[in-house]
Length: 157
Image (cartoon, rainbow, N blue to C red; front, side):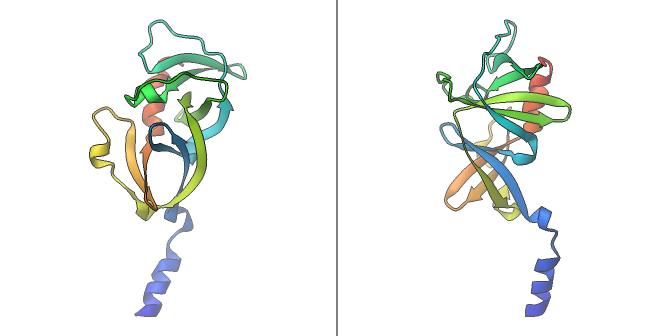
């Protein structure tokens, strides 16, 4: 029986065993699937859009491309904070849409086992962009749905 279980373990595809997450810290830890994060840039000049919803900070110019900028705090219903020059913007891509996401701090790239990821349950309210929950030791990290964030901002791109 020992050999059989060892065989099953080694036959699992390695790419299915872990997920890479880019962790950001707001009032708590959130993460985005690494495959949707193109880069992290410093805060740049933001052009406000008069008709935009509150969570849309405006648009930025990223090397000649106009990119809508989502204020993640407001999108998640958290109190807003002042943005400074050290504020991070994650450039996300899902589908054909590229958006910027304002996060207080990008803390790390984390690899978690797929067995440590579960549905978010009560931690994701109605209209929440939170799609999953990752457990890493005693940390609970809410994983955001990049496609949902990008789709909502696509109208402004």
